[in-house]
Every structure is written in C-alpha cells, then in structure tokens.
Length: 608
Image (cartoon, rainbow, N blue to C red; front, top):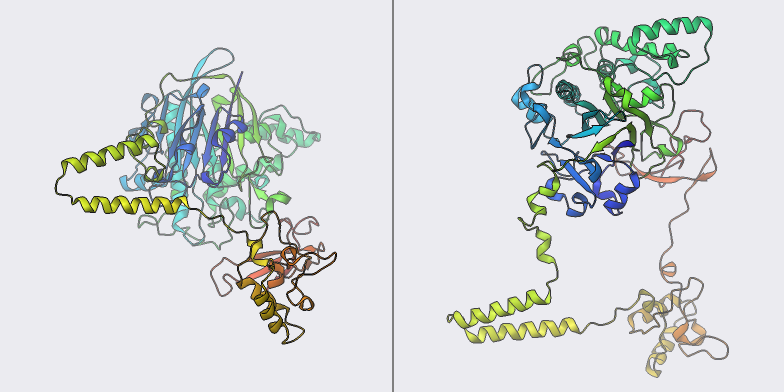
C-alpha cells in the first residue's frame, strides 16, 4: 500500500505526440504534477484536459500566451477534496479550513504585488485525504510550483524570484498551521548545493547567491540514517558534534565539510552580497556589490537583507537528499543545444519538499533520468499509505469548465463535417424559409441551387494526383516529337540537359509503382529519341537521376579533431553582429574540461 507523487517540467504540454492517457499511465503515479505547460486557457484542448481515469487542475499565465503554466493530474483513486489556483488565495478554488485565504498570509503584502506574483500561472494546490499504514487518517496538500528564474537581461526578476519564494513559504506555513501536511513539488530553478551542480564555482560566490541562501533558510538539513560511511575516529567525533548541532544523522559522518557549507551559507546571508546568477547559472557580474541594492520591481529598491528576511520560520526537508545525502550527478535538467544530457552535465533544480513531521511516511525519493521527452527529467517520492478518493471533485477541476460542458462552442466546431441528419435539417429549414418568406426572389434561389450543383459535381470529379517521379520519366514520343528531338540533339554532343528539359515540359504518363532511381541516366543522344531495341529498356521505363541530377547535396560536415567525428551545424541565436550566422562544432555533449568523452573545442564558421 503506497502512494507515488511525480513532478516533471515537460517544456510544453502540446509537445507530446502520444495520447495523454498513455503518457499518464506510463508514469505510474497517483498524482502527476507538470510544470511549464505553455498553454493558456483558450489554447487548452479537450484531449489534454479531460483524460479518462484522471481529474486535472490547471493554472494559466494571465500575462502572455504560450508561457509558464502548471497542471496537476490526479488518478480517480487519488481525487482531491479541495483545489486552488495560485498562492495568493485570489483565484478560483478553496482549501481546507481556510488555509487558502489572503488573511492567513504573514507579513505585509501589497495588493498589486500579490496580483503580479500570481499572474504567471506558476502554482496550483490540491488537498487529499490519506490513510497511513497504521490506519491514521491525515490530510496532505500538494503544491505544484514552477518558480521563476533570473533573466540576466532583466535584473528586476531577481526580486520577483525571491518574493515568489517568500510567498510560497508563507502559503505552505499557513496550510501546515491548519494541521494539513505540506508537499511542495516542482521546478524550483535553483541548484541548492555544490553537489547539485555539474560545475560549481570554486569561489564562495556559489554559496552567496540569493536563491541558495534563501533555500538554506527554508530547508532543514535532516538526513535518513540508513547508510553508514567509513570515517576515521577524529572525523567521526567531529561528525557527531555537527550532527547534534545541525540535526544531521550519522549517514553524513564521512563528509562533514560538505554539510558544514550549509551553515556557511547561512553566515554568508548576513555578511556577503550576491550576484544575479541562480539555478540556471547564467554568467553575470555582481551588481552593487557593497549594498546589494537594485531597482526595477514595483519602482522600489530592496537590499539583499530585505529580500532574505522572512515573516515565517517554517522549514521543510529536501526529500531526495533525505534518502541520498551524498549521491552525486543526480541532475534533473540539461542544456539541450549543447547535448549536455548525453554526458550528464546538468543541474538539479527539480525538487520535492515536505514538512518534517511527514518524513515518517516517506519510503523513497527518486530522480528518473531515464525518462525522456523534455530538457528536464521527472522526480518522485513514494509514500507509505493510501489516498482516500474524494466523493466530489473540487469546482476548479477542468471537467467543470464551460467549454468542456457544451455551454460554449469552440471555433473548431464550425469546421467539422456535418452528418446527413444535420444536412437534412438544413434542407428542411431552407424549404420552410422559401415557403414563408415571400420577399426572396425565386430566380435567386434557383440560381443558388444551380451553383451548388455545379460545385458539387466539380468536387466529385477528382483527378488522380501524379507522382513526382512522373516528371522524370521519358515518354515514347510521336514521330513529330522524335523529329524535333533529333533536330535539337543535332546542335551538339553534350546537350543532355537541354534534351532533359524538353521532356519535362511534355505531358508524361508513368506507372505509379515505379520510383526514381539514382543510378539510371536520362535518354542519351545516340538514341535520338527513338525506342531502344534488344535487351535495353524502352523509353517509358528509362529514368533520370531525379533531384540528384538537378542539384547537388550539401557538402559533408568537417571532422572535429578531438574525436575525428562529423561536426554538427549550429546557428548563432544571440543578438549581435554574428546573429543567424552558422558554424560547425563538436557533436558531443558538453562536459567538464579535460573529459575525453565530452565536447572538444572544435569551432569553424560556415564558408571559411
């Protein structure tokens, strides 16, 4: 008896070509949380929203189309009792015992700021009834979030991200205060520790960045004591003291210095300033290194200290690190253009957090790197217990959307083929109108009927479409044509192209079962257009080289010197003098410098 909750940044819901039910069933989870759906409500189609065996709960961006968005799919065995869009409590839905209202949020929140933080469709909350293995009944709230990342060209997003973190933390604290356990799943967009990054900075700047410093405050360093590490007596003694001070279990005794960096980060939160680089690790110089102040968010300036201050002391636990505190290369996101997934050169920015009291119900935490389909991979947790399905679905379920209840016609419905009964009703209506409306000229009606008949007969007369190969097949021409061809061929001995062009303009008939052959040549000058005799094929079966005869293919790519393998063609997308310019680079995935299996430094502009 177990429950599986899965989270996955899918980078576009409509990018999946498979049936939604097949996709959801293949993930084998009771609650499936998607981030970055990239659909707005007007773009949401019924096959993606109404799936047999599941109920779904969406939140959409209110700012722009094809951006952000989250969705939670719950199996019928795990139907929620409550659901709500967003984190502010200003949108559709409600939560148990008032946990989703604005009034329970701590601190001072401006109305405009709350509206802005909840306008990008970055969160949806579902609440469920669960029965533990011991028979105890409890409530759990699953907060599905897609946290913002810091755009290097938009410094105001730095403040937006930290304020979103604070709102998320306060909402989780408010829900927990009602006695409901809290599980936060999704793309947090920050790699928390060095072990969560493929190539962290060697300086203290890595720990000093605001996103990591906030996670240090939000997360408890608690780890499950199932795995014992070999340590010396001195390290073990120091490890016990560190474990007592930081709530760290004995599984961490082998690498205490790694764990102490968490405490170092807490110190840096008070003493050092921070650059803009966060979970996606875009390179950017530090701004205002002395004060840490910047503008661009609501017309205000906020220091690092203000952004890191919180109105709640509520903390949660990273469930994957709880089970696997020292597991390396457990990355969840890779850069697609550099093929980094092939070399596992990525970051861990997808998480599942839970409150400390819920740890006793956890069985496992998982990073599913083998699941493809996005630049992220899914993460999941397994819970000991069983969810009790709700008798009634929440009102914010997509099944209750008017457009899926037949109350609102979609534009696509006007382009569906009409049934015979519908046409009969239309004919009956037309006849009735003719008999009742005396102002219509009868000759106009007849004229319309004649036009309709002509168009119908034209549609009925469909001609079989010719294959492309028919234009490259030589026809057995008449005597007049052969004489003309003979005159044309008498110009010279190297006019195969001219003769071939003449055949293209003629009406040619070919066998549909034949294909263009790359090794058969066009009709030679020696035949003079006459059918060949003997064992040779007649002209109707002689074909030319098709497109290969007309144009040459692209040149083969150069070989990279590092691996002696064909390079890959890429295009510059960054704004500047080289934008849209093409170049060749090593086809292998990016990796650490010196890794022979990773991408070498080969680079060559096209045309040089």
